[in-house]
Length: 607
Image 1 (cartoon, one colour):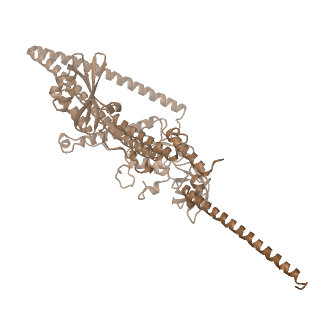
Image 2 (cartoon, rainbow, N blue to C red):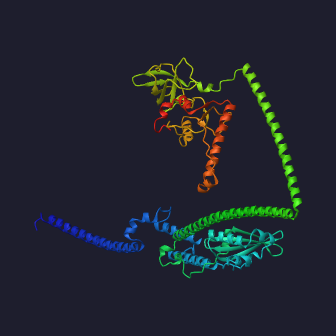
């Protein structure tokens, strides 16, 4: 071999050996990695299987929402078990066993809940007790059967006089007409007061219940009878027991796990409680209505009883008077004719003497009255000569305001009074000359009506005016009713012709009263020291007293005659008292002038 090729051959050999060694190492590493990968894949499959048994992929994704907040130093499963333990403890009051499984804990809770609900169901059916038997009261049975004469046989003398059989029938029929027909006796109770035994018989009627209170004296006679409402607790004791239905309550069925939870059970019990409460409220309302009806019925019955007793007393008095008259007449008839004549003559003389004394007393009283009137008249004349009497009508001539501006083309004037003075639209005034006193008849030179009101002034349209006496600035205005400082008091009496047709209008006084009240005045029925003015119409006409034949044809004729007399007496009384108290009196025309309403009074709808 040539000397240059030996080194090259060694290099190739070394390279080959190195490559083979590396291949062997790579092969070993690959085999080891493959074995490890298979082992990891086996472990992963086993862990996936264990995880699937523990929770599905969807449950794992939502594990935070399903379990809730994770407790410190506990896993999600540990947290869920802790929550389960708390729930079971809430139901049972503790855990069955320390290391018991969740299934054992839930089954124990279900079994305990079922046992408790069954005990409640049995307790509900075992606690019902039968109602006491209702003994029959003989007196009440006589009332119920309509044997009123037999019932009154058990009365004492006072009850027999106050409540005979016919009145007892009326009382019983009045009671059942209010509360319905009698059905049965429910029971009775006994009380003792002084020497009386009181038996309260609770009876059922068609529309409710009553206690029939029967009072017995020492001789076992009925000394009192009353009808009163039965107390609710007494009615409860007489209620019949409910028959067990034999059916299991709906919340005992546990085929559906959703129906055995305490919350679900509580909701069902709450619903049942609400139904029971609603039923109780409805029953209470019905009881109240029945109680009200009974109270009304008892009030009517008591009123009727009092009326009957009053009538009885009146008739008894009439009977006693008739008996006394009969006795006196019988005694008189037994006297001889001469005795009768002497008796009558004596009575006649006594009546003549009494009449003579009364007549003499009347003459003396009249003479004294005349002397007193003459003396008072002389005294008044002397007083008037010294001090002139005050003008009673002075308040009527007081001006209420004045004209401050005139617009002749539009027939509008402005007044110096406004809303601050209690002026309002529709108020009317009479206008008088500024430098002249208000005339006695109240007729002004114009009449105005307010149509616009400001705070301190107002505007009015001219309703009537005189060409020769035009309205000028500072003319005064007045209205007898209206006053900015006080409320005037009026009395209205008599008949009035409001429309001027010559006939008195019907209810004219009521229309005048309404006008006065509308404009701020007050109207009283009688004249007193508070009265400011009297509006007096014509004297009421007194009807002719009807004859007996006229009253037979028209039964109301006498009443109308007496009403006309009463109206005339009232009219004269108002007039006399007004004159005595110096209260100004106005007839209708003068009154309308003084309120500025004369022109408008003739228009339709003015009143």
